[in-house]
Image: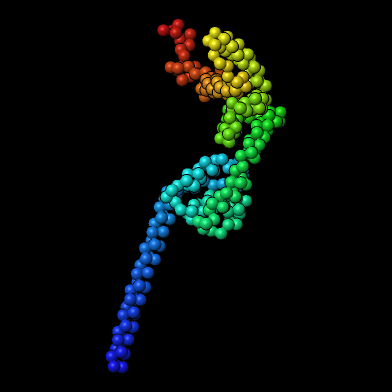
Length: 280
């Protein structure tokens, strides 16, 4: 009886050993499969966004950065772990933004908190509006300084700041009364005089036309702001056309009087002299 029970125990132990070894093999295979899946997901994520936007911690560059990174944030094929890795890689080395993201432990659990802290520090709408309005004021101050901008560069700066304010919700319809004097005061004196003449003529024409058609009048400041930007475009295109028209002739300088050449004779000595003609 004892020998039979020992045999049963031995067989039972062997069976447990076989089952446990198979369990270990299956567990190892599952880990290998999960790791290969994670690697493929990470590789696909890298291929999806090979070039990441960068942020240097300058609040003026936040809108441009967030406009690109928002696509990564809303990508349903990326988990929070990959998004956090992307967020950290997008921060410029040594910047305050990178220090902020590095203060969070790496992992998907930290992504939403890190992004929220980044937005609260650099993406506050009221602070961004204040920054861009101050930039408009700086253009007014630059008008009286020694640093001069071309009309094209001035227009590009104005459009950049006005578009940024529109993205932040500062619509031109509501805030044109504030924006128009700033934009107008940043213009050079000659351009400002030309604009005032154009504005007076255009306004009298529009008032006559609207009274005849009984149209609803738009905001005067909105009309002035939009009209000023269109006027600047016309002025810039006019200056560029004048520059093209004048520069195309300066490439071919007129010959100097002392260097005049006579076609058909390499030298004036080749002209027949009068006494030789009489001898013929």
